[in-house]
Length: 387
Ligand code: PLP
Image 1 (cartoon, rainbow, N blue to C red):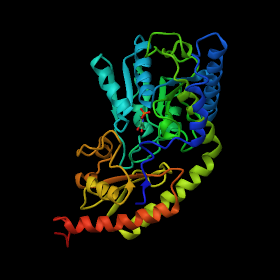
Image 2 (image 1 turned 180 degrees about the horizontal axis):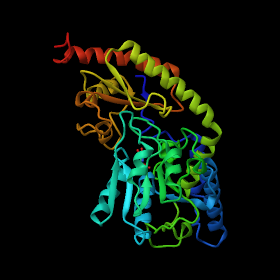
Image 3 (image 1 turned 30 degrees about the horizontal axis):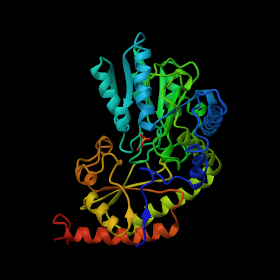
Image 4 (image 1 turned 120 degrees about the horizontal axis):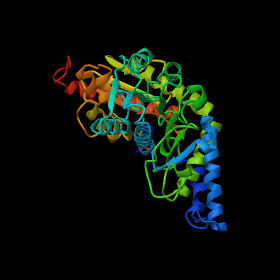
């Protein structure tokens, strides 16, 4: 059976050049980067090269990059590190209602520790209003964390406008896990002090990420027990994965324009095709300010889970929300925050496209999706003409 993977927002296949770059660092080049001998120094220089590659992709300086075990860790590090290092200045954090759980849950934890968190609402497209950030700022605000683009609905936030408002008043973090490698990301243009990214979302390996920390940022380390990463993050570096992330960043920089163009064309073809062939379908997220890889649709009178399972039977892998919330029947916090009616929230499905997606894939998906929706609607007691 034909198998089509349209869940690139959940994870991406590791690029063959990334796998090849990592390979020697498991066995022949196995040194510990902290060792002073030649084995160690070989590993050290590989880690430093990767740091340069990652820095270059986001226009940072290499010494501003700290490797982590994931995007989740990078986000936890920000919340923990900024809050505990700047307690003397204040205890207020601003974030949005549609952040990934790797931001929201550390925020809930910090609330239990006496910090106050403002969760900003979003509009029907999932956009944060920069004016709401301005209104929420107080002299006790130590951190604002607003994601660059949402993993479920693909909406890209006005990060530059928000940073103009914040202007050195407080630290500004963005979770760019979904954007790095998908659209241009430049920490200086965005005006952020901290930025999280993750290897496996940009054709690198799983279990590695990075945090950009602008020079001069006052931050407590999160993982303690060694002087690695300039005392910012203890533990022996995961050399093969860091090398892989570096290579993935280099490839992303070279291929960014062509990836973006390719995905935008296919994304728009899929959206247009569905809208032309299936009545009563809503595109979730912003019509223009959206990730080139993201198509999130709500189909009236059918359940997202049923579409997902039927697509899987036809060889198509999609998602009903973020990977971690799939499996739960509750509409996601993101769909709730954009005010989607419960029936539309239940009928939501996310297709996320990637560098290996072809036009033939989109044609195939359109073909099977139309048939699946038709079949499910006919079985639905609430659909006119249904069971
Ligand atoms: N932030 C966003 C926006 C994400 O989409 C994800 C993963 O889905 C994460 C953070 C977590 O990244 P990781 O899988 O590297 O822990």
